[in-house]
Image (cartoon, rainbow, N blue to C red; front, side, top):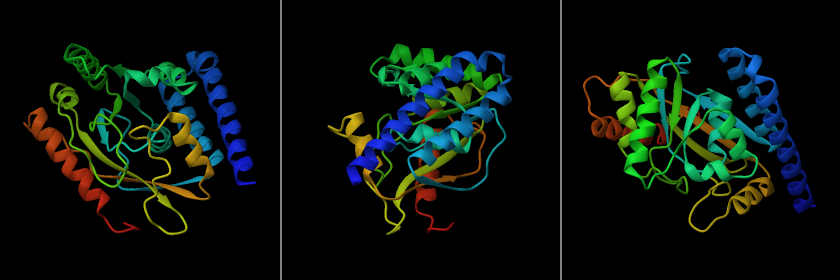
Length: 249
């Protein structure tokens, strides 16, 4: 029974992803940016609903932009969760481009893809990010450069923070975690690490009886003369502080 319900969730999610792709291809070209953001947020919220994942958000929601949002990275679910909270353009590893359905959605959503093994590619993406920030957009990055199990925050890579320095754009810390609703403890079910495949992580997620995605946002702060390394260090510290807040904060 549990496996049948999980399979049903996966099937509904696949259909929802396909409908989102259709909307992006055929509806988005006629929409204004604000209308697109509303559609993306509603779609992401519906996706979490199909997965029976509750969403809890605390902290200040900034204006639409310019802002560089920096979050810790736990799961393939992170983009869905953050789009449900505050839609933005994402910077993602190049491999995401090839994910079934979700990769095509990311492409159509204007995601900036980066090959993390190539310093030259990082320079290209930082330049693009700075231009988007100067144009007043919101961007989201996962500066750990990989996913963790959600129990700690890995070191932040500083390269992408150069975009905020160059554009003099504020940076907002965001702390993510997935919690078992019954126990209130951090759940490892959505984790996507080590030898996990995307399908394995998705299967654990849909088999879990009750998850809550918690997003804690800190205030957006301008660079204030800090270089990219100082900005990365301070932002990571802010994310750690947000994670340590007691439940209900």
